[in-house]
Image (cartoon, rainbow, N blue to C red; front, top):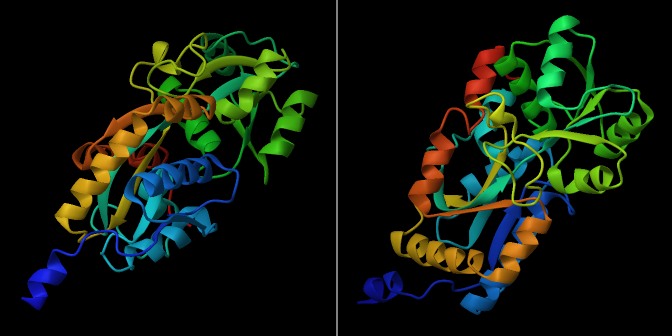
Length: 306
């Protein structure tokens, strides 16, 4: 009887920790805090965001992969999770085996911007100029696995062009150099780029998602020129493998209710996130998809884990 009572104990029994693998102020952090606030209110238990930045999100992912599978430790996962084993040789977890999908949240595209020093008005123009002078156009990159890196590498692969990557330690410095003409192209998050676009400081050429973003419907999707192109970053909630089915069902159901709230949807749109709610199976499909997981890109460019 005691075992039966324990098995039927209501969840959550204590505060739920949502682990975030990136710093405060990032899109991942914003989403984690938004979901924590609303899920905590709905489930009448504290949901606490715990930032564990470092190593491209692998520190946080490793912590969750080895946490008790009782529903009290979760991860706000993203493309960084599925890319990790292809970026770092010391990763010990397997994204598809060591995590239980709870639900899909949405996608966040980056946007390719042209600086004032180049006369590029569209993605088609960019491709034409790059083919005429391979390697001449320089783009700012935040390094392997970042949204800017994924977006530009996939553009090179899909369009058959060669660009010169200029790595930066911070998006702020990359933006400064794009404004100053030290680099020709910049590919920041859509939310971060829009003030620059509205002020006419940089020209938006195309968003890196498969379709136009609700946050900037006037900016074409790169996929309109290159069918099949999709370098948007997915976001979803996962837990350790072995989460009880009843916990997954309840948590997924509450997550979808939160994402249906108009205020939450407006906050996501403002943050440059395109809503894509989905159940555990929908998230599992995204994580296993070679294109959306980033695995296809790594294979195409022959990238070896560092």
